[in-house]
Length: 637
Image (cartoon, rainbow, N blue to C red):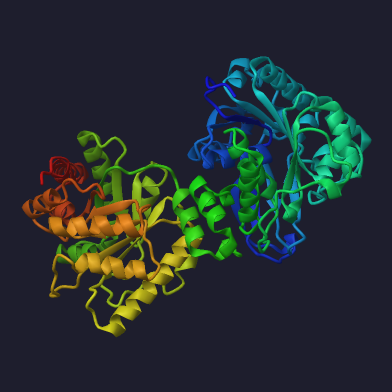
């Protein structure tokens, strides 16, 4: 492998959107809801290899519509290079509808008639781009039409000329070769001599060929595995990876053994199967993690088998593929993890190492998720509470104006409720801002959630980018009955966030009148970690430097993947907030602040009394926000 190559693998082939049935066991026609994931075998492998640390790229076409944008953005979020993902203005992105009936039945329907990725042509292939990669991977469907075959052949020729390894994942789907009824996507094998002869025209140029026994049968033109392997070997010197399901896999570099009894498999990990769809893409992603970094076959197969085992235990394909850290943990502990889908540590690692990659080095947040305070303010000003909705939209404009003037460069945050702020939430969603959204019933102690206890149902309607924020008035020395009530609700909320995929911000405020010492908040955090709850964010009051050191140590020890801490304001005077900011200086775990009343209270009162207009309100709130940003950025220990 050339050290001058900037990419590890370019994947050419299917790019689609998978719609996975959420009702397990239901016939596909009776399914009532679906989860949307990245799909298409080539896309899954590009995505999976990127998650596992390789420099991956995708070469395909997507439609000029929302699903094409989704595919492009999902690939980019995983770190996949998308510079050669072509937008096709004439065709739509392919869709696949999939179900999970039982452990052996996975109905699926391909909606791919004249779809974008099957329009890839020779003009889309850039020889310099192919040459920039250690390897080129093509999946079998892209040999199935004259146009995609020609494009694939050109890509292979460019790879051969540049010393780029050629990988073929046979990935045989009879329906995509026109051999079954349109709705029969589940059938995995139909013998067809013309398909076999067609596939055999590309085997001689391959360096790596990967397939199940059935896929080897179609490539080799025989339903006897050894006969089929010998045919492939007669045409190609490639390394052959034969997938053997729950038995694992084997790697054949040279002569084919005389019988299957002579094949020594690299054994896999036995797990409870939920969904086999996409497991092969995960398997190949893992194998390439080793093969493209010059690991021995045993290591590469260990990666591959473990990736496949993890994915068959989860819903979906691309999102179920593990990260490198998660995979290494699983391999080291697989003997004690019979159910990857139920293992707390493994699922925690999956949650925190596969979330959106943006690292918030700084958050300067304007918090106006207050509900009771705004209602009380409107009442005191003899204003119609219905005006609060517009006021919150104006605060979005104030945040935007202040952030631009302060040069936040994207590190802008807001906390907004959906009681009065749904319009404001709609305005900011999709802008790339940090967005927190409260779930607690204001002032409740013990904590209660708005909308009742079915928080999971509520989160289904929330955009994934919204961070679930929950304020708990909590003290580690609370009466045991009260503490247990609060902790039960915290655990339920955390489980709901893990299920929905939302990040959780836990805001801890010691109740008014309680004794607060340097160890109070650190003790409260330790107690919550002991419950098995590991929030993505913490929101905490200003603390002493001794407390900041303890908080830093606890997070680094108990949850090093924690995003960080933001500071709250509690309507404190500006000078007090400045002192709190200064106390946090030098502690990197503190990412910034989310402050509200100190910024918006006075301008809001004037606006509600109609003593200032919209623009004056925006200017006044923006200036207060800018002042706090300045204090944050100029803090000194």
